[in-house]
Length: 176
Image (tube, rainbow, N blue to C red):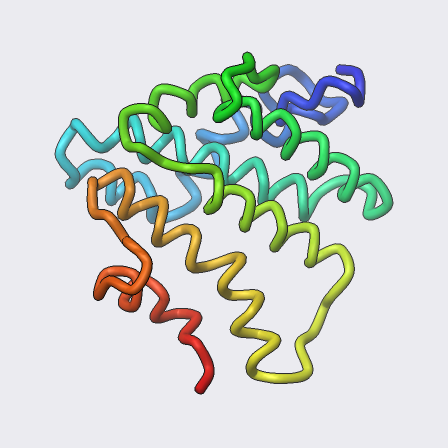
């Protein structure tokens, strides 16, 4: 795969084994509590949660794996492809093509995904936080978006200033 065509499956291994590869995503999914939740949730949410999970997993893997000097470029390439989900283009990455119907059906905007990419880009530069506020800022990029994505899949709006927004920000409360 050429570096100019980020598919999320950017390894030199067999097809489906790199970040974003179907085999790799299902293996990661089985290693977490995620499949248990899927079994107990109504079917109408499962495909959307899997589509969101897959993109989040790819973003995380791109930020954690491969040569450290290549991670930023890979994240930026994936982010550019990710933006096509909302601009009407055709994403090159299979994982992003699978996300398009979920984004449309659930009304998910780019912000939570952009924040997750930003968190992983920040991981390339920052390994420790000196203050509580710095850590909370990181959580606003890394943890809060996950909650927002799940809320969106379940059709729960988190409008600015709403109780849902305040509660979904519980892992990254605003400092006083």
